[in-house]
Image (cartoon, rainbow, N blue to C red; front, side):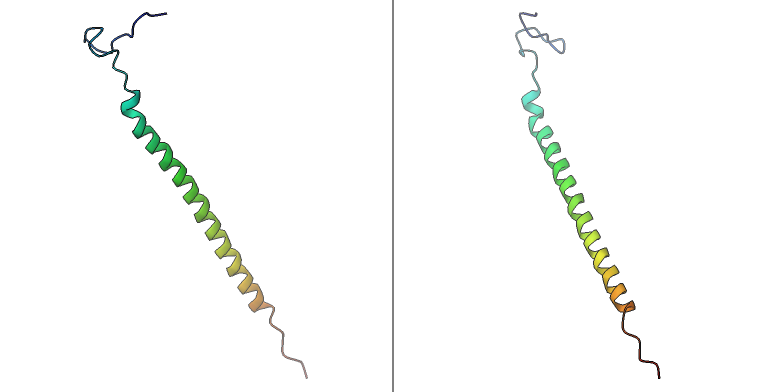
Length: 73
C-alpha cells in the first residue's frame, strides 16, 4: 500500500527507516513473558504444596481422633 515506511516523528523519510522499535523492545517483551510464565508455575507449585500440607494435617487429626477407646469394665 505504502512504498515506504511512514516516519514516526519529524525526521526525514530516509533518515531512520521508519523507526522500527521491534528489535529494541523484543528483549523486554520476551522477559515479561518469561516472568509471567515463571510466576504462573510458581503459583501452581505453591498451591500444590499448600494443598498437600493441608491434606496431611487433616489426616493426622483424623488418625488422632480414631484412637481406640479403653475397654469398659
